[in-house]
Image (cartoon, rainbow, N blue to C red; front, side, top):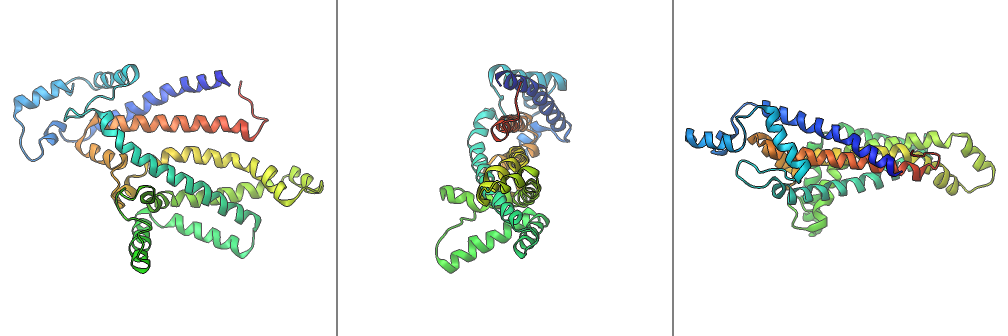
Length: 314
């Protein structure tokens, strides 16, 4: 097991280098001058602009700029500074916490609601409730996140408060603590909940048709034991794979949700940094997202052996 983990971590190095180099090249290719953007509407003094370009290595070749950045990350854990001389790690710290809270809330909702509805539909295939669940998930997939966010914000955030007098679902900011993430968490997880529900239904339905399920039923085991112990446990493997990959997608795809609910997370910061062409901030955010994605997939791979003892790592 230990050798497998080490091998996977070593394999992650070229993935990290490739992803950061790719985003570095994309940001470098964007039109505009980041030093001019730093001064806003004012025209910078040419001498000062040249000094700043030298200070931030903007006159160096692209690969040399990338080397300065990635060597600081790998050898010193230093993500550098932005063009206002603020450490990138400080910029990311608080904002990553907001996005991580949002993504984890969405992931928990996705797992509980998606697996629950999928299990319910799989055990009642062909009935009215199965059709309703499939139709609901299709609707959730079809409606854009932007529309879902504004509709739920109006109904549950504004109208529900008018009807009950209780501010159950805050519509903006993080002032209400955990409750601030409930509504945006559901909006962020909406499409994933629909896909996970359908995946759970399909996976469990196929598993319940397997020979060993019929054998367990013939031995006189209860329906709950057959489904929970033998069926759901084996059906969970593709679901765990989906959830592990989706954690990175939730964190990286939170831009629209954070904008709707005015959450000052990493999504908003990424959009602003791309607009201002702040390469260190953009690549720093992407680097951390890639690391989270790699670690999430490693944890998923290790969970396979827990769910299915036949899986062994050499």
